[in-house]
Length: 232
Picture 1 (tube, helix red, strand yellow):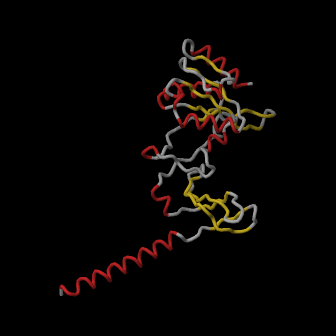
Picture 2 (spheres, helix red, strand yellow):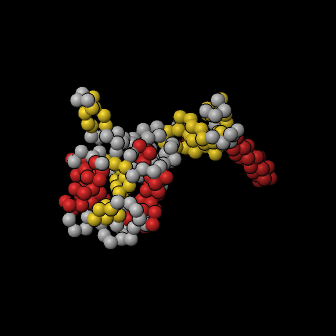
Picture 3 (cartoon, rainbow, N blue to C red):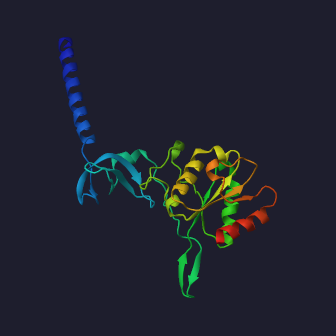
């Protein structure tokens, strides 16, 4: 019996190699999507499992022919290891009447803050809503272990949909990478930004001309000034 063991071991290795080859073939199976530039279904390069703002799974990549970003709805095995985000609702806040009859939702004001300032940011968001200024504030759709959610649009949906931003700026927040990424994207879109200052931190050079409101001494006064600026 022992003399056959090496042969059995060799056969086992061959079978394992065949299984690995099959798995590799499955992984390399191309994903197709419609390219608006080529006007046809094309093979997707660099496919990435992503989520839409509604929490729906999909795959984003590039057209193999022209490089245009292409997208295909549907769940893949890659989504199994990812946390499914909650739906992002930006346009569900304050509504104002138009012509005395119709109503529309006000554009959202994005509250950009670091978790160290969460208590202040949440109070500010509530007070702004009560003053008729619709806000969007992070509600906790962060992936486990600090992993970022792969959004279909490449950035957080609320950043794309919100019309204005209030940066809650403190010493620690000024060093937060996520906060900086958010306002940097807003600046590339040329959307208005204002600062709610919580201490004497130096304002980043890129924001030096940004309107700022000092909440260190008198919250009510700074808040009234902020509301006036956001209402213009």
